[in-house]
Image (cartoon, rainbow, N blue to C red; front, side, top):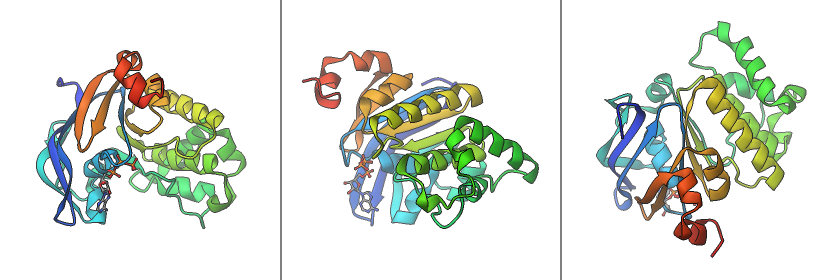
Length: 246
Ligand code: ATP
């Protein structure tokens, strides 16, 4: 890690319901302006890590019991989620948690709740430029959109918040291969155009490593491997266990 890390997680320990120890001393860093991938099998603790950063852990009876989350050098592990959003961290939850009974555009507007009203029209235009399909369907109820369109809506809502750090939990989950490619291309585009730092949790290691600059691999609540994404793509162990090339 360097001073150029916008986020530093140090020796983080997380417990659910006062008993279940899920993160067991997790450390990672996100260099400013880059995409960092967090990979690992089901249950390794990836989603828990994102929730510990965004503060959403407290909604699930989870608690940080040791270690720290430093955002721009400041400890934030004991702040409430709203404070963390206002500092510029926005999480897109796994499974497209959008408001099904609101239109696409109403969903997008919700993302801007911390922004001045004067920014909303420009923000919507930007999101519709990234996702032309959302422009076509802006008056439609979000619940009637396809899975891929709902994922676009969830990411678009995050863009409306103009975060400095975007936490993405499994954006490819349940999407057809072509759509996965499209979503990852857009994530890359958003990262370079907006300068937003991205921490990307994924089961689809190949797709994640192809857009990320660096990556961490988690097992059982700890980081077991880290490095440049390009190096990990060519690492025999990674190929065998995470890329299905064994
Ligand atoms: P997945 O890809 O399956 O979501 P993950 O790596 O994101 O996996 P987590 O969702 O962080 O893993 O879960 C890590 C562990 O924490 C699992 O054993 C899970 O059962 C447990 N866990 C997650 N949420 C809770 C909760 N609210 N209460 C109790 N245990 C939980």
